[in-house]
Length: 461
Image (cartoon, rainbow, N blue to C red; front, side, top):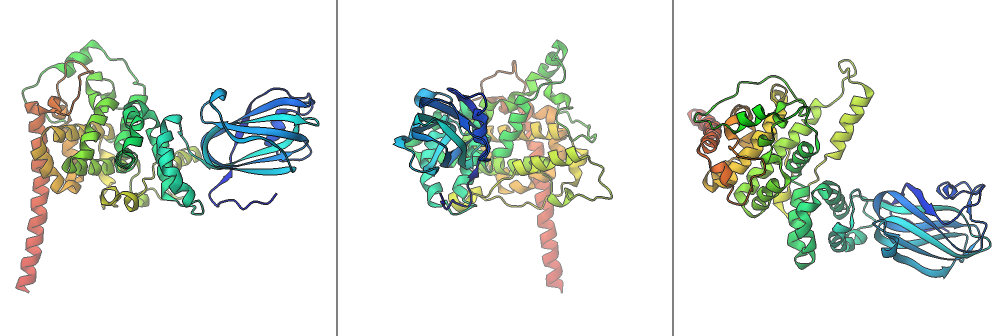
């Protein structure tokens, strides 16, 4: 049976989850193979079934069944392994031809159950599940799917549909943050446009921040937190201290910064979502956070020309290269400004990544987040930083050096973080933030001086 399929769909990998019966020689696994010399058979005539599980959730566009001798069947699908909740996509019907392709209209799917009601005997050559994979698609995202699906279907001939790409980014990147997004997804149908814009900002321009938070919370510390560590981190300090540790270190896992729970408050998902919700509402804080996110993206994916492989100089193993490429491809940020406006544009900042090799990435990540929380607590300073947010890159060494002072003093790592961000209103933290601002204003002044010097030369000429 010839059916013209959309260019973006393909046969998706799956496995046989279960079946009611199989004959000794004609196993259920044969439905995975398009070889017509094998097939699945139950050697019975009525009421048998087979359950298929896709490797990843998907939007299922078609089901192809190459029938051998089934006379009547019905087909149901589900996103979660709860057969009683499966939705019928093909009610009880006869199997009129050997090669049948049923459209399923991009239904969210992970499981497919084919119930064979009559056969002579019940036997199937192979089954193909055709659609587009959507990693992380769970029932909680159903309101988002319902809203985006008409757009996805209307652009089904477009292999680069931005609505489909957006859905993939939302599900794959926000899956681990479903507890923090439960209320947003529950109330999504009430205000779908504003809710979609918010979660799209999280999965798009602000995602590098969430990526760093997820890495820190999911990684296991390489040592134990001692009482001495806790007492040291909680001791009050009256002076602004500056660290001079600029040893080359790119790895986060080797940094001792992740050992102390008192230093982890900025990496708590609940705290970071309070910050990002305010950033979404406040234009100045939003601008600073988006710049910080682009900086963190540079930590993960430095300039592409620095990643170009030179066969004569590179000594990386094949596995290291593969891991590097997988990280780069999985962290691509798409520009959704065509859907949501200029705030979603992803500019390519001309930052020099060379000096990152002498900075501590783990310290910078923590320092940047503390700067963001401090900005959220001081709208006036935040507004000044937002005026030239791109200069944030130039003060990274100072952010690393001031990290001990940028950390708020907390009595326990589970302090409640609310929209006042009172922890970061401590005098020593604000003093450190002021130092960052002064350094940034210095660079701004140098830029202005250079500009007027050039203009003066032009006038003299």
